[in-house]
Amino acid sequence: MAENVVVLGAGYAGAGAITKLQSELEGNARLTWIADVDYHLVLHESHRVIRDPDVRSDITIPVDEIADPSTQFIQDEVTGLDTDEQVVELADTDDVEYDYVLVGLGSQTAYYGIPGLEEHSLTLKSLDDALEIHESVKQASRDATRGDPAQIVIGGAGLSGIQTAGEIAEFRDVHRAPLEIHLVEALDEIFPGNDPEIQQALRDLLQDAGVQIHTDDPITEADDEVIHFDEGDPLEHDVLVWTGGITGRDALDGADLEKEHNRVNAGANFQTSNERVFAIGDSAIIDQGDQPAPPTAQAAWQAAEVAGENISRAIENRPLKTWEHEDKGTVVSVGEKAVAHGVKPAFGVSMPVDTFGGFPAQKLKKLIAARWIADLTSWNRARRAWSSL
Image 1 (cartoon, rainbow, N blue to C red):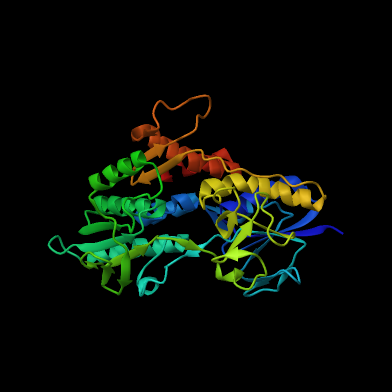
Image 2 (cartoon, rainbow, N blue to C red):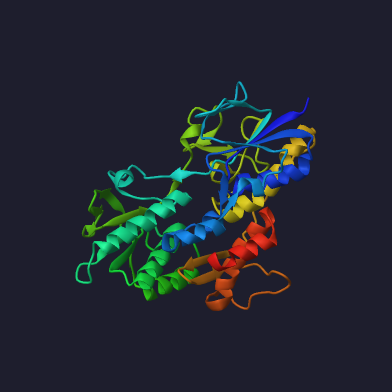
């Protein structure tokens, strides 16, 4: 009897693994794909929707453009994973049995126990989140004046926070909206943990865009109008966006797997403490020796290829492959501008400097997203999306 292989999630990990599994299994197993939306979102470009909601059609790919006709797709929310019974529990439809399951559910926002933060902030984890930020910023600008501009505060100056601030600044400029934008980071520099060269380049772009940067002072409390800091003066907000951290999905609460903060521990072959369960992307803490793989789109994209092959190998009782994350560099947008750092040579061309901006960085940012869309669908689909990327 053919094995039942189930993939959970339609993010980079899930969508990438589905494409690999379809080519690996070639109809020799039953493949089921479960996600709470019927499209894949190019999440690292979702901030574009904050400025212009019309781009959403270019950065969402319907599952029927990715899934083969033989792949069963179920749109539903995963509520649990019973590893004893080998069952995926769903909110509105019948539970789904599996022989092997790949957990790629992504993450949810972590609030670190800061009082009032969850109740009074918006997040950027989905298309709906991006649309809600757009509407909130638009409404705040309507209620404001030049003499009394709306205060937009973004908490967390990692990748999402920086790109969100950049898009809101573009919205402000395009619509001549009376907005003041603040980017808040608890640590002593934006884009924490990265090279000082790219940190400074991003700081320069943000300041050029009129974003006020506050660092080295953590948020201690939030209410519906003000955030409070450990040391500094309170900061008023009309819109508060929180991008400060991730934790695992509630659906994994009761799963009998080794986990940390609801993120599943997985080896470099993506196998978990249960040999029938594999985990990938933000859902997982993937062993890479000294530190786990980063929870980035780039890492999930790379890992999906090996994870899909390893499930096929497990079915055939072949040795599993070990994956090693390769950091191919970082490209971050601030509105229409971008900064690239540590980019590996591509197409036989090496970069003359380690950190660069301008036209080359802008086009590289677009090319990365276009390449992902093309890998999932086709270059024609990627070309149609180019102007929105």
